[in-house]
Image (cartoon, rainbow, N blue to C red):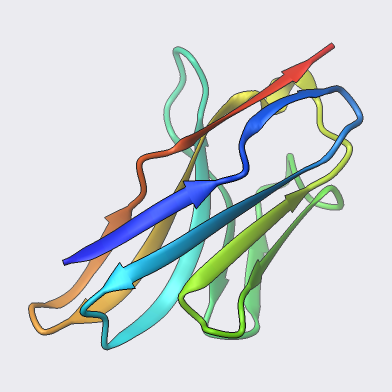
Length: 119
């Protein structure tokens, strides 16, 4: 199986920065894409940023210019650099990976990390 572990969440004041990390482990043949999602209280989970392969990157309009997604050299890690944070960025942030194992290709999720931005 595939395990995703996020880290880096916390409490920050508006205008501050945080860097989230996510590492995938397990019997992985390859990872096609990795992404960050978030879910705030009472709302549906939404896409924040994704990276396909090495160079196709997409962002939600709400975070463009403030967040940067990147993959580590080992290709099983993904980062989300979050700058100019706003109170509306407060949410649980989840990492996902589209990974291929001996069982085939499936999407996997981490347990989430809380980001709280105070005004």
